Image 1 (cartoon, rainbow, N blue to C red):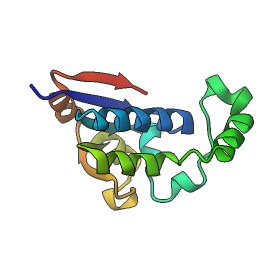
Image 2 (tube, helix red, strand yellow; image 1 turned 180 degrees about the vertical axis):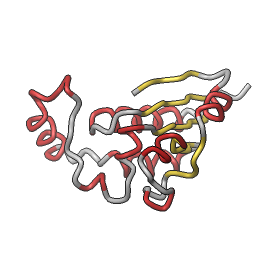
Image 3 (cartoon, one colour; image 1 turned 90 degrees about the vertical axis):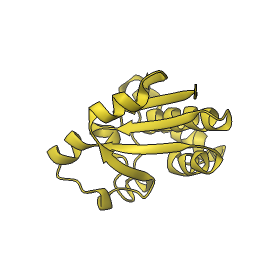
Length: 137
């Protein structure tokens, strides 16, 4: 049976985005199939060029946001989108946009970064995730 990991990404904060794509990258390097389902605020982070100005960290880290972002810059941590693109070059990693969120927010596929392959409903995501690990970020 094929090993797979499915990530539900509903946060658009830099810390959650980096966590999701780092896990995806590691799983891809281990020859696991990875799908990322982006919904709500996670989907908004995938709008074209949003990654260039997104400097939000989750509420858990808000006291350290400025310090953490400066440390990442000083250590030359790649941005989350470049890390995701690298993961896609390493292995089988796909990004699916949530159809309901797309409809609610009147977003079209062409409004999103090219790493988003398609629009799917939750049923399709769950069917594809069946038999594998599911992570929520």
